[in-house]
Image (cartoon, rainbow, N blue to C red):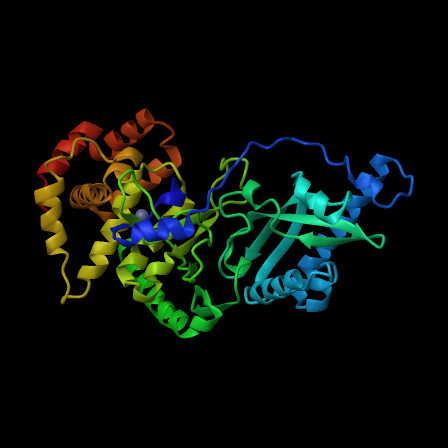
Length: 434
Ligand SMILES: [Zn+2]
């Protein structure tokens, strides 16, 4: 699962984080509810329900189009025109959203109403016209996204004085996708800092940190390009905000207590984020755990950026090679500096993790023991580079990414590239001394 990929750090902070960010998200299947029902009564015009549903749809489409145009053109008044003026808090939040969105450059931006999500509390609060719907946000960020990507929001509209207005933007958040309404622009004011093709997003009050991360990120991009032999343009967004909910449910993982995810590469698609990821990914964002954002090491970014560089190839590569490649590039980048070495890590892997290597580690092994699995995955990749060369390893990665549709298919691809079955590969890796 790409969402969960990340380097794991054991840490006492894990439990604290879990309680601070433990958002319980109840997802439910699309209920297929037909729109309509309650909206027609508000105006009392005597129109048929069908006419009213159509009018509502037209009015909401118009509001959404106006908001998108307002963002692209920088028209705050037009953006706020549809927001309930009787709710100063909502207006203030929408003003922040606008200011945040304006710091990104949109090649395209479009909002469209998706499925209705009945919210009885909203009807109680705003009257019978209150209509809650999921909204798709399809956008392409200039210089970052090669194609449009999609995320979702939940808006509640109601009729007041014969006019549809936006009355709430958080009433159905629990029915959205994992990162729906949790984008970097959805919280407090931000600052967006650009360094070459790197875009860093930090809290507005932490621009100095953003500039520092921008510099480190550029070095990390260069390191990935030195050690990953396939083309990558180095365009990447790094989100390092204090807000723990950005594009994330939880910063802990694994079956044991005490694992903290330091950073994630969150994959982006051009499709409804709730209805399965059947299409090829477009790209990824890197999201840094707020707890480590001020002490961010370059090698952590190198690991995550390797995911960013490799994810667009395809998502079928087995976890051990996905993480192994990221660790391979990270360790090589550390040793680019003659003053640094990963010898202690090498020796830990050989002494502590290789004797128990029985299978190429998958999701279950990573969940059970992150340190051991990352170490084993790294060593397997080092072995492949020693026998196939870095280009041969990358070509195996690519073949698996595109054609590894089942364990049997992946095994056949591994055999074709290395001459070994997965079991033979495990045996060779276990005795590989580096
Ligand atoms: Zn990773």
